[in-house]
Amino acid sequence: MKSKTVYLCTECGNETPKWQGRCPACGAWNSLKEYTESAAPASRGAASRSFSRPKRLNEIEGSDEIRFSTGMGELDRVLGGGGVRGSLVLVGGAPGIGKSTLLLQICTELCKEQTVLYVSGEESEKQLKMRAERLKVSADRLMILSETNMDDVLNSVNEVKPDLLIIDSIQTLYRSGSDSAPGSISQVKDCTMSLLQLSKSTGITVFVVGHINKEGSIAGPKVLEHMVDCVLYFEGDRSGSYRLLRAAKNRFGSTNEIGVFEMADHGLVEIPNPSEALLQGRPKGASGTCVACPIEGTRPILAEVQALVTRSTLNVPRRAADGFDFNRTILLLAVLEKRGGLNLSSADVYLNVIGGLRLDEPAADLPVALAIASSLRDQPLSDQLAAVGEIGLTGEIRNVSDLPKRLNEISRLGFTACVIPRRGTDNLVPPEGLKLLRVRNIREAIEISM
Image 1 (cartoon, rainbow, N blue to C red):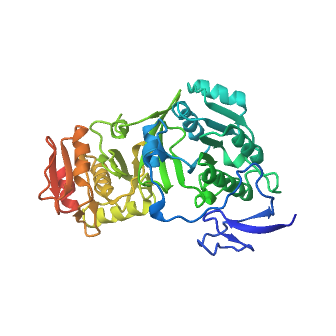
Image 2: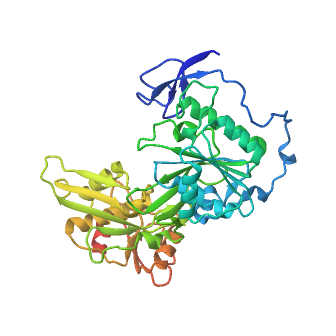
Image 3: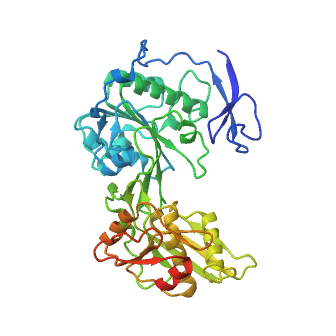
């Protein structure tokens, strides 16, 4: 059996025959990793391949029955309305973030109508039983298999014929025909390809767990994203209680939706109203805080932005941002100093978004700027005030998309005033009980808010 040595980029998955300091595809430095692949025999235990004839698009029957509910509304939202039969879904995230907990919890609802095979390469059958009891998972049609050999897993699938297969995790599986160690790039890609062929040929829905580190550069989700139908990422601080589930890739739905969960003693709990949950514990009468309203997918979410501005003792003042783009923070500080009349060149500025959210859209510019101005002047904003708007380099406040939807969410949570752009909002009818403070530029926004 001949083998060859190739180099695979851990950032984009590009394969090259020789080592280079820089990946020729994505341009990343020192990202090429060496591995040896052998000409492995055909997959044993896989379903027999049959010749497929091309069909006209109009001849293919479409049906809503390929969708099914997982029993968790937040997960269904991120998947685009539920799971899809015959799809391969990759659930990635740092170890201990809650991936295995989520997949084991959905088995209770799924097993009411489907047979689920849960394959674990990290826990024994007794350990899985103990975890299921802690999570109060009880399902007669849930099958458990503790195995790491991919061929044995495929043989068990052919024997059980489940409707849904869960692999926890892909880094523990290996093919006996390969010389590479379990968890290597070669093994991970070979095992995932076998699962892809299995899902497409039999219609079995496959959920695969993949671990990543903080850099996301190990053999796992990053090199498998082009092979699977859907890529879900669990985000959040392990020391915190909130978890965010995002879709980085979804062939069957939008990638803009997020699911919000809270890690409790008995497992993950859905947060159907994340705005109310994220604003709990907000300080009253404190300076340096403002409420933003970003839109995640189709859902507006209220988030608290906190800023701390202090006198710097360094030659170069410090700037730090958590949950907000650092370069965008530097840009807003320059606009505040040049157009807003604030002296920030000799101050340390720290910015934080509460709850683990990340504000990526321009609509968060205005609340971030108001929080910084409030902290610098040490003048608190009204507890019933929110802000929505984009800031330009000349200090103008620009209109944003879906403004009526944002204002309805702000009003629903009991806020009585909102700072919005004046341009393009003359015909906007505010919700009952919500006062709109229309401003043209950042200087006017600061004066009307304090």
